Image (cartoon, rainbow, N blue to C red; front, side, top):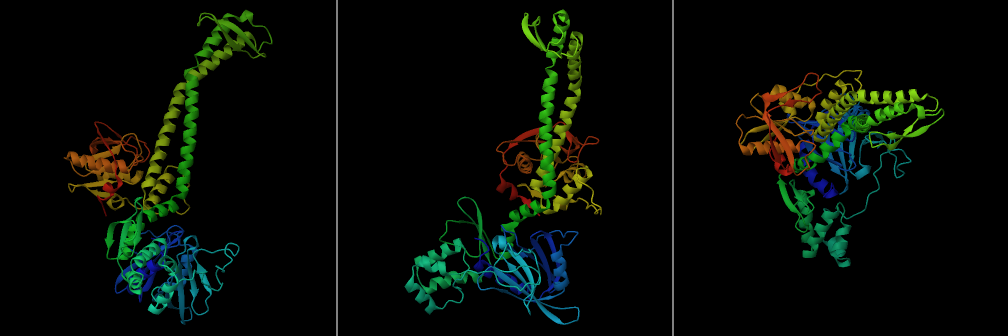
Length: 562
């Protein structure tokens, strides 16, 4: 179920009493399509997350810690100017459509009271957040400014008159009377009637149809609609293992209940956590991911060329042989020849073709083959060194990509700092103060035995965890020969079960997370060393044991703790 009109009605039942009367104290835009409004009411802070993301348009109260960017976008500066310190007078929904208006009261520079509306339109790729003056209806600013050529239905630019988008007409189930229902009932079948009810997506419409097919009555309709006046929620799973969220428990859909919540906001936070994190990480990591993929592509191509060069060098005996045979038969070479066939005494005098430079003497042609042979043989050591350097660099960028894949939004800044320190990104003109790494930055898990496992999420965190945080007798885990997180089991006498569970966590937070058989090395932390001058995250170790595990996402993430 998506954020349809009736779901929004349920959500407002929970949000409206909490926020109405609150003072808007902070506004920031952590990502391109997302806003966070912090309200202060009765000595408590409440964070309202609003997202105009085309795939996941939504709003709800969140307890998630979302970092505030150093530089505020223009839209946020406008919102702060007009709304910061204002009081939320009320929240209303346009019928049962996906439009919600937050009504604010504030005072302008002259001290006069002004009423402003922040309109949240949750309409897929047309989603937007619009601030306008309630008195004259003129738009002050909006999250997405749309050129007139792209939207001819209405003008979506500052100073234009705010107009509602074209809405699909439908019956408001909360306002439908029994007489009106009976008239509709006499004219159409349950499916046709369900299609007339506004604010329903496909799942809700199918569920309502099921209700009416069981009992085509006003009472049945009222029972279905009445479920949207409650504030709880349910997360359910489809047969294809896709999650869906409902504000009620459906009985006519092929869904399995996973979890139930008394607070719809908590349900939404859990439901959108992975999708939102992936989207936020994608937005923040765009620049560095392009850099990483470009470097991986260049290094892979370079290694291919170097391997061809090494193969040529290691198979250069043909040049020496041709030089020797040519020198032994100089009298048979005539001026102006470009090639000659001579007996190869290394192959039972089988004929061998030798190319010649017509501009050179026979002796110089022979010397040319010896020079080429010596140059190739001398290059073998250098080429091998270059291959090793390129392979190490490729492994490093593979580790950075794995860190991005496992990152949460707040981790991207550390990965950016790392690439800047390594010289792959330009240093910003205004240097930000680096945040110190602490245990709070890490992923934390509790095993069945109650023991704690700590997981680094990028190379900086891996180094800090392994070299500074861990006790020397703790057990260190890492996937064998594959980029992944450093994992520390905080115990010096783990059981076999502890080792298996910790190894599964290490396998999950690696490039091999989707593999069925993953080899994981483990050893006491004191046996892990960092070579001088090594890149972040790179360590060597001795005396390790290995175990093969299969990482299963649900089992592993169920052990995660805040």
